[in-house]
Length: 436
Image (tube, rainbow, N blue to C red; front, side, top):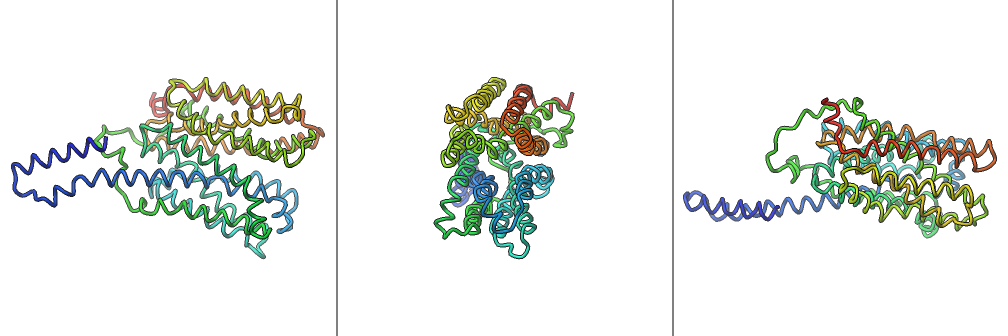
């Protein structure tokens, strides 16, 4: 498309030069550089998206890997440590609401750049809070999580704005990068800490370097206030970006779907290894099983969005992922140790409802402004829905003394997840629903 634009511009300039001597050679030479500039800028956006996605979870999973060391180092009680596991979804819900307003004022690129800077500062500061103790650690963590929250919401917006004809492939790319960052931080943090002398502070702070790298691609783009490449061609006037999102049934279905899949993901990350250990699986093997579950998201996070955008209705994908989840929970209930690897794989597949939810955000709105509102609403409401799940599983486990009731709860939640996912997968947009 860009090459065609370049040829058209060259033909136009040649025609003009034949009739007007005012056009000189330097003017002709300038014209072909525009497509090359836009192509370079687009590549920079791709690099920024990938690096940003890599940084959307290490702040959480690196802390989980060193939870015991952090507790000992800060004198943190078990109850406070338990509450900290619920802080990420709470911050995502609270700060994610701010993202569309900030994007309207400063632009989505500037807000994501600031978000990466906030992640960098939070990760570098929180291990060295000194006398501030747990309160300082929590405050610095909240700063990093605020950066993650606004970036979570605006990633679909940037994809929709810059790549409207490649929503599936680009969503798959950053979903894959997000899954890779999640699993890498969980797997590498402990050995990396040991390589750095066994100091948990260094093991946490090192992830700030990756976040700092994610700031760099966005800096030259912040200064560019022009339209994205996809917006260069004149288009018909779009409706007002102010969409009453709460009037859309699809928006509510997507929010509940997002919340229930997040609930399942946080329960899996927080408790699955313990389920295997209580079934007699060695601790090291239980950790590997959890890593397998998380790594499943790397290839599937790229494939599922591409498949989803090629279908008129994404309900079949929702049902397939839900069936995998039900099979995995059944395995955990009846034979947790006997088929441990199979259950880990099935639950890893089921957890790929997350990239599907992100893809649906980009598909269920027609404009970038609509995507921003839908993304903020679905993610903020969804993360609020997900907060009680891991805590309730812990309560049921402690009160019943086993995993029967918690697994029954996980299974029960999968049914409404499949129902609302099918509703969210219908071929319609929130703007059309609200306009009726």
